[in-house]
Image (tube, rainbow, N blue to C red; front, side, top):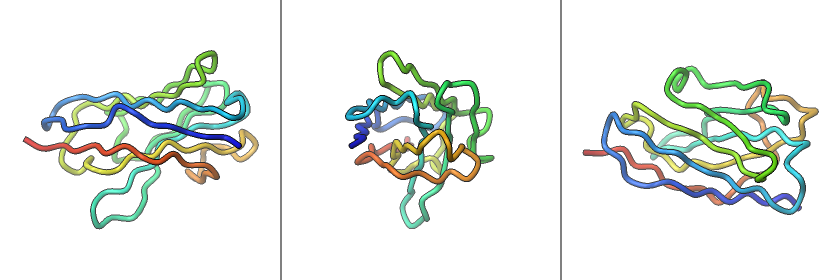
Length: 123
């Protein structure tokens, strides 16, 4: 059973940066696309970013393009989300997610989720 554990959330000021990490265990992440989804207060869950199993392709929500960067290190079974120029609208619980490489990243649909890490952007 694939398990995902996020870390790196916290309180950050507007304009600041934060890097989230996601450690994958249980099954090799080599055959899974990894993504990040978030759910802000009173909002629906939103796909934020996704990276293909080999790291060669990425997809971002329009709301984070140019500010967020997703990456992965399969040797470390870890994925990352580097976030910059954060604002209040980025406040949310961020979940690491995974889906078989055969499904692609196009629709931000995932089968596995971590427990989430809170990101709060506030002065």
